[in-house]
Image (tube, rainbow over all chains, first blue to last red; front, side, top):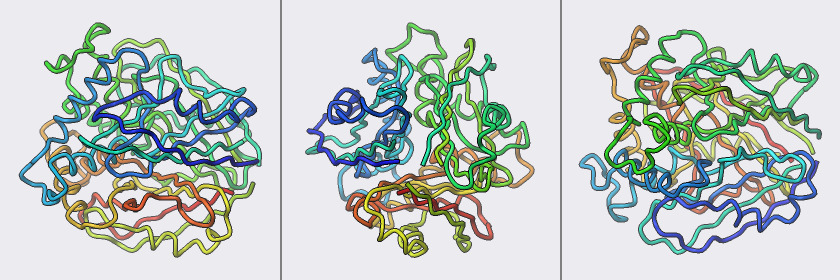
Length: 139
Length: 139
Length: 139
């Protein structure tokens, strides 16, 4: 058993849902050598999140943004935490609903994702400057 | 430390929430030999999901189906991804809300679940032909 | 690779979202000795949950309670599971939406959380008597 861990900084993404699978794998040349194990990707923020979903049609990611905006609207009357901007409290709620980590099985040197699965970075703030991820390989 | 991994294919389940704890454990005779560790169950799809919830009363699973259908309705006007059927985009949204994996501690040869906890397969499509899971034991 | 696992019992918390990071770390003196690894916290219940979110302003936790109560209301007409109290079915739904576990990377003897991240115990019942957690360190 061994761990291999690194922190990376993603550049700023605009608000919305973005596929980052290749970016993450690009930081992990060690992945190829792992017969069986896990990759965990952990985001060190509470107003962005990580999830796994459809890796092909961009309208899926657009619909995610539109639908999560309806479920977690800005400026709801019951929000008391409002001094960091209208997009802040919805961002916290979205973050816990989607989650701050993904844990993906590794099989024969590759992420064992389904054909249509990709890793999404979900940016819930309007203007962020980038996000820090902890990547941990376990084998 | 060791890993034991296998892929299994679940038969088609009808749309809804289904308890699959015993099915999964039935594929893992190795579980009994593990003193401390984890089981991860990962679903290789973006329109079905896995979660842990109440393992006894079927009305709980029915209420899950009914309530998630309200939160993620079919044919919403803001959906642009509509060419795979009315049940498709809601399925993607439900999948990321509930998640594509569960990670369960193992203690003395058993899944260390609470008395009322079971693993749900959440089938969000109307007509699917079965689902592939990656089961990974870590010990 | 080694595992260190223990079960702890949290005292009863009132319904709502509560930061428990220090309580959990207080049970894990072994954490300091781990160079790289993971902590998993798993809750053995289906009407409470665990998530990671903002660790500073209590109004965030209040807004979580208020907003999740809107998304998962009590006494909805479509609930058939109603004999355990008005707060029961919403509790199950919230539990699967937020999740029953958090898995946090460990780096140099500390949980590698972001500056603003803390572990929330999310108590979804009105009157509970306490909750059991399984803490597992992997290194």
